[in-house]
Length: 84
Image (cartoon, rainbow, N blue to C red; front, side):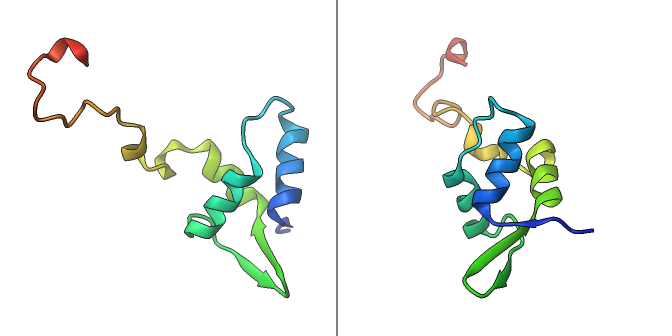
């Protein structure tokens, strides 16, 4: 059975499974708004498949690694490899 949740109820489920989670409601809503997670619109609610979101969060192959690269990696003015 598909477990559909709003972002707020999804966050509560995540916090139940991991009380020390750093996942925020803002982050979940950002995932939904960006299209990274498919959404089902039901009236005024946006519902997401909880299992799909948990799979997304637990598998690094889904994440865009470009956002984690430091600022000096592509710096054309730096010839010193020791800063990396």
